[in-house]
Image (cartoon, rainbow, N blue to C red; front, side, top):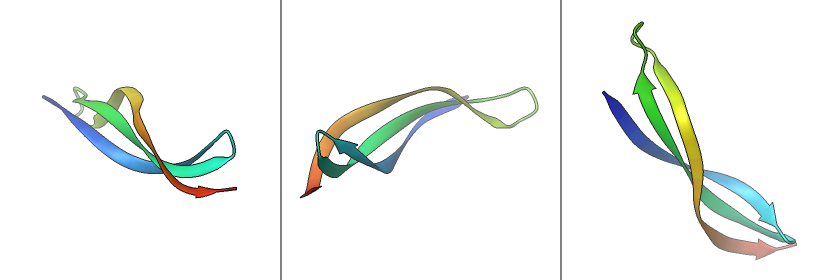
Length: 50
């Protein structure tokens, strides 16, 4: 079993601070623990200029 989850992180790109979704592909180890298999950013959403 596995899942795809997302979380918002604050990021700064070219002087612009915003929130970006990072998707996490998760799997379950043999011990029953969640493991991050890979992660990748989604689209950038502007919230303020610095």
